[in-house]
Length: 412
Ligand SMILES: Nc1nc2c(ncn2[C@@H]2O[C@H](COP(=O)(O)OP(=O)(O)OP(=O)(O)O)[C@@H](O)[C@H]2O)c(=O)[nH]1
Image 1 (cartoon, rainbow, N blue to C red):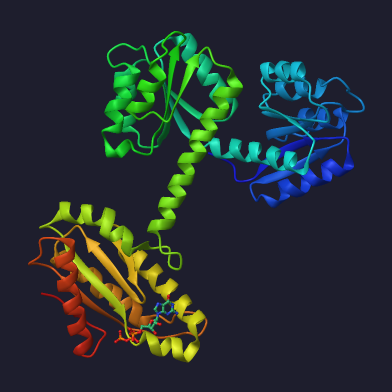
Image 2: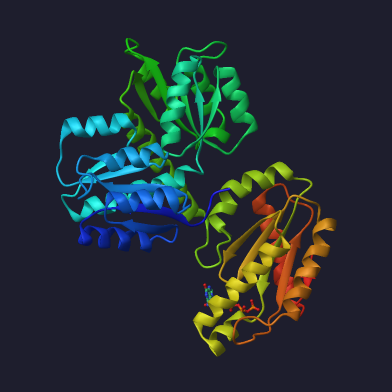
């Protein structure tokens, strides 16, 4: 169970820097900053306060501990540690990273502070990212697992390609695969090829690994569909950067896809989604499928009477009703005040649900203006061989429902 409010320890003797970090952390609803201005205070907080710290941001040179002792204190309590320092020193950076510090950031501009927060925020998100490590050498596997766990990833393991495939097939919460090349049964390259031929794994982030000497392997892995490739032995900072960059690129892609498919006002799927993914799903369930077009009655009058903003609130509230009544079907905002429900069940099963929806709408008062509204529904239950023909039939029946006086269902 991941806690909602994560305590982040900040140890910094400069009041200005402390203030800036406090401000930035407080802006993020997930974090509660716990501020200390010297080593002793931090020691008391860590050892006697009973607080479980999610991460620590520490200044290397404190008035009562000038040589980075704070890092050892924090790491000895297994708290992920980000170092902020006034001066950049390559040897020191290397030694700190080898100790297990997550990042070493110089306080040279205001961007540094944002970077620190970004590292801690990434750490928070990583808790929900499940990574599968496929590697036959138990030593290497453990090494990669430890590296990933330092960054709070949720790690699971597979000893070869076959086990990796089985785990991926049975667990769709796995977001990333880190796979070695040389493995028994199915090697890493064949594993990537198999996964990329399956649309289900199109969003899986894949990073290939192989031992030094396999020069052409990186191209082979990437051509097969891997997002990235690393040669062993790798430096853990590079490993982490690549893992995060690839993950963030994937997250951005998912956000763009979501923006393209979700109606921003009602948060229902949109018409574009219906004609794309919905079309495929619907086609598969014919002839067991049915479809309904739902259209609010006299909606223009509501806009004219109460204004467009109240009209928007009403659309949101009705969309909520659509979600509640048809949770198992593809329900989308088709446009304006029109919704579409594509059901993977025959019309006889859909009809009572539509009746209940109409009753629910009829009985309720919506928005602060307590608006009463009704809805007309056109259904297609037979005689269609595609989404397009089903929509056409449902639309004709919706027109008929309006013509007959609204607030009713017409089906074929
Ligand atoms: N507030 C708001 N209004 C919208 C939105 N999209 C479309 N509309 C309005 O919805 C109204 C639809 O009007 P009509 O197509 O004439 O239909 P109606 O008034 O519901 O009449 P019937 O469908 O015949 O019962 C128009 O006034 C559009 O401006 C939106 O996103 N928000």
